[in-house]
Length: 259
Image (cartoon, rainbow, N blue to C red):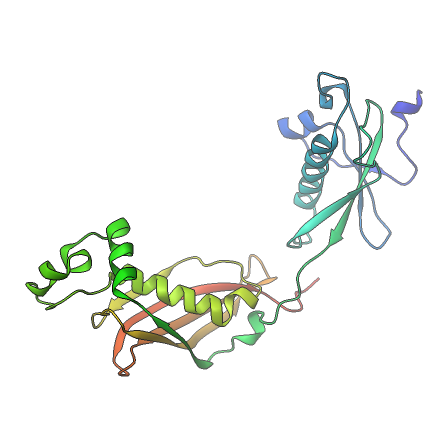
């Protein structure tokens, strides 16, 4: 058997079929260390017209191999995963070169996780002021109804003057959430928002704040490393008048997931 066909000691084949794996080539895994190691050998089909596999192709091979390996594992993949290759990106790889892919955790340490949003939590934040120019600019692009874009026309409507689009009020709430906690949280997105009510118009110069109340919190059965939170968001202006009510879900990674 030629050296190019020899699999290093400790590696076993990953049993996974399908056309994508066929295009990638045979994959091998070695366990027993601090982190699994995925192995693959550069083949002719991975080479460019100059007969080499450059750094970009090596990254593609590594990412694909790692993705397939994680898909075959029962352990949920960690966010922000990168890989180390035994082949130096400064040197091109050639057919027959052996590549080892290691999962290297570089997950950011967040301030807030699912555990930080227990039922009954109430907090207020914000202080975002909407100017006339911002209201008109947003509405011209996304909601060009007369009472959002034309000050004179707006005076002749039931609102008696220019008001912000309700969707801009939602966007303002989102910005305040990001500034208050989401950008420092292990957010996993949201499956949706419901029960939006625009209670009072938002006018130029209004300063908005948010009151957040956690209504429900539970772990996802299908993904136990993620927790689901049902929130109620209430928006108030500088006169303490409620202008919007919204309920929706948010998902966060757990601080100490099982397994």
